[in-house]
Image (cartoon, rainbow, N blue to C red; front, side, top):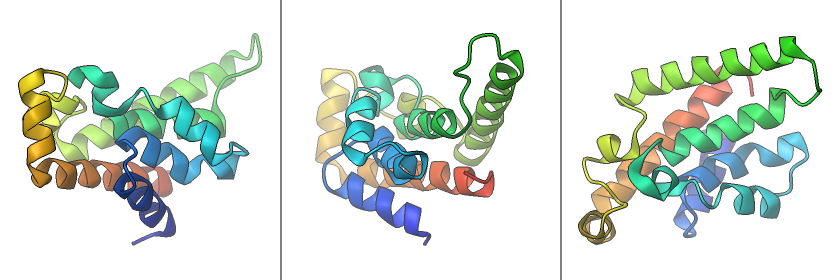
Length: 145
């Protein structure tokens, strides 16, 4: 297991969400302190709390943005590059996990009252989330981040 996967696993095990775990594992490499990374990513777990795009994927996209994001006005090459990197990540994440939507990946919608109870009661969902965190970190590492 890589150091970043171990870091992400530790963050996740300490009560942070999947997006926070992935982004925190890469943030300091891009001069973003852990506290800031945890704050920025806090609203993205559980598919932005709506069962939408998996938090592990959104945390990875934050890492891609921190590494290679478009930030200079008029730099259309950087904008295109960031878009291509995002698309490549999402394509690979979907290929490895089967989907990008949290509710589809888990088989339960954690944004509903029933789904939240089911998610909290059954440890298999946290295990699934760790698998998505691991996939996101592995893809980023393979892509050179």
